[in-house]
Amino acid sequence: MGLDKKKIDQLPEFNIADHINTADEAQEYLQEALREGLSSWLVSLGDIAKSVGMKELAERSGLHRENIYRVFKEGANPSVKTVDKLIKAMGIRLKMVV
Image (cartoon, rainbow, N blue to C red):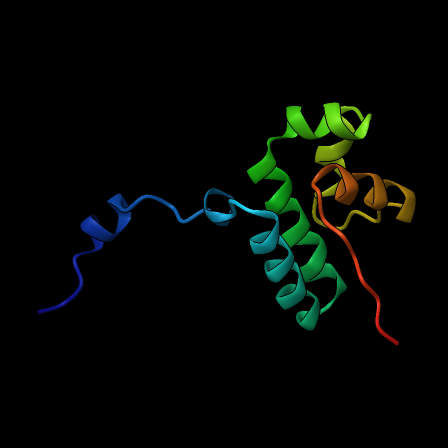
């Protein structure tokens, strides 16, 4: 018995943002993404931003919603200051170990 392509196409698309519900889950997700590299980490941060909600994140961070969307577009190179505002608004703490 093979896979039914029609049934597969009808499955809802998996969206990680729907499954990040706590700050601990967000931190764990970011930590794992960082192991893959900085660009992967930024994509993961965008997923967490979606789980919070862009409108809510804009209010918490003081950034315009359109600017937040731009931060997470492919190829974006956001400033450290902008990323700092966003992670604080998401309730995430970064810890650097050298």
